[in-house]
Length: 252
Image: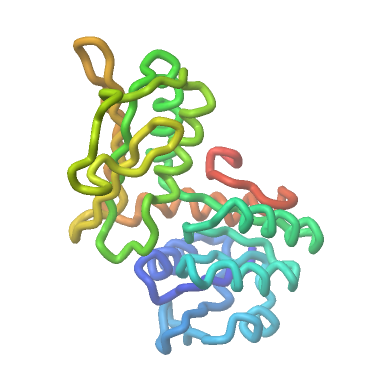
């Protein structure tokens, strides 16, 4: 597989470049970023369309920004390139558009809010626990350079829990916020809290409350290397799909 990395000078982009260079069956053919520079011994291009037409990649890995990712996908999909996306911040309308574009151009897109295998298992365990504990809150903790909140992983976790959770009114029915937003965002009665601090990578904790007990399920990445097995697997498998695939668990 010939791979182009978009957002190659960002922290995730540089980690992705390093990981691809270590795989014998993947070939890094282009790197793209809005900034000028080089990575992995390769000059970084600044125009995505030119890089695609010149390098002819099979797949584009995108770790850019929420404001840029849709334009990147429109360009890549129009040229028939498979896409593996770790950028978050997609609306439901965005996802419908991506699926439509991929199918029209006979290609595929994997959008994964989280490429860490631990995060995938965390969500599966949270869904199982939600069958027995209907009171739940989610705390997601990211570095202070992350632009969107809550994280895509937290939103995905809440959606999956909502599919199996018995709907209840959490907290006291007369509860009032004396400071706006202190109780977090609300999704189907669940609260989601976002922390943004230097030192975090991308942690998440799902806390269930029951009579006389709590159950905590958490994932705690210690470096960005934890995402690379998922990214590499996605590069290898994405050509076997059609349209949009949302979530790494769907290709495991």
